[in-house]
Image 1 (cartoon, rainbow, N blue to C red):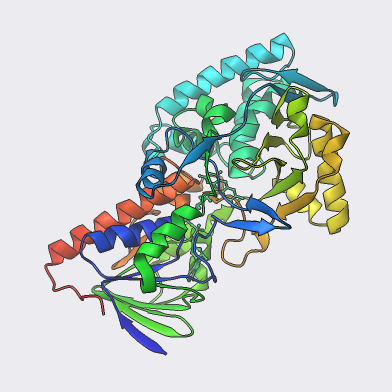
Image 2 (image 1 turned 90 degrees about the vertical axis):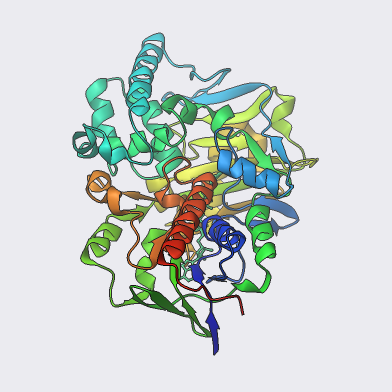
Length: 461
Ligand code: FDA
């Protein structure tokens, strides 16, 4: 058992925790980062599976994600654009694959008109939402008490329009059934990306990737912290009072003036707080839950779809894999497709054997790209639902009514305990950009608090 003293103990070595730790160090405070896993990065994880380099977790960067873009540049990493030459594919209710270009799916003219009109309405509503404080909108309560599905169905009877509109924040982002979260939660998701239109624009939201994988961001941030990052150290107990904390793992005790809980809020209850967190936090944390999506990687000896003039971009609210993209690595001769299976479809798939799952998913991909899609040389399913220290994907969101009720206290510190995670971000919500923003925010709050208290800081030992 080692006894360590630092100014700040950071719990979790994901993008949020490592950003906070680096910022605190720069401000002259000493840190220890305790990470449960045997690696850093959390939901950012690049690995080689059967000879293919795969980004098992987060990977894309969009042009509005300033905090992530700055970090990537500062770490000396380079980016490349997602392949997008050629036609996209849409599969409608008749099961027919249709090619299209631009953002509007090839639907009937009346459906197209309805989608465009509701999109305009949504953009106007989103423009009124402050992603950092969606609960302050005058209609926050009203919009938080109606489900995303019910609101859309009240706008139109066109089922295909509803499914396509619902998709952007539903299967594609919050990865929950659209009856399970509110209109307000949906507007927050869109506001966090600048607008609803940005969110449905794959060329915007899925713009770039980092050469070598996005996990390099946490890997390089951790490298700067050296021995102050301790792996295989799940924090089991956090004792706290107004002026100090003691974090305990199975091997270490870290005494500090502040703690940062830098992981998904659904995991707070894995830690015994002594004394317990206040009742408000006990309540609010129970109203958050993780979405669930399977990210499917299929690698082929060549990007065969490009030969057919296809970009690889494919959507269908009627398909098991509701969206799929060309995910070929930078400079790779082989071609990679990435597909996503979300919420109830993901639940259902995990009742099947691995072979049946693979068959069903590849069958779905073949509806977009033809029979060749059924024969990848490497196939892999990212299953974050079975990861003890994540438990879902992509991130956590509130249940119906929870956002306006509890959102204002999501980031409120409890004594010396501060909270930082992508799952509580405004801009960049549920994304790495949001994790970095939250890491920065919490570090600056702690630096201010420690200056205000005027106490002598512990120096790194
Ligand atoms: P994160 O969960 O990454 O880190 C928390 C860390 O805390 C983990 O390492 C965990 O092990 C640790 N921990 C938990 N409990 C602990 C305890 N008790 N003691 C010690 N350590 C503990 N984003 C994006 O911008 N672009 C994208 O393309 C995607 N795509 C995507 C795909 C998939 C499949 C996933 C799962 C996620 C994405 N995302 C994404 C989301 C993005 O990856 C995510 O929002 C951030 O990486 C979250 O970073 P955080 O640091 O907030 O938490």
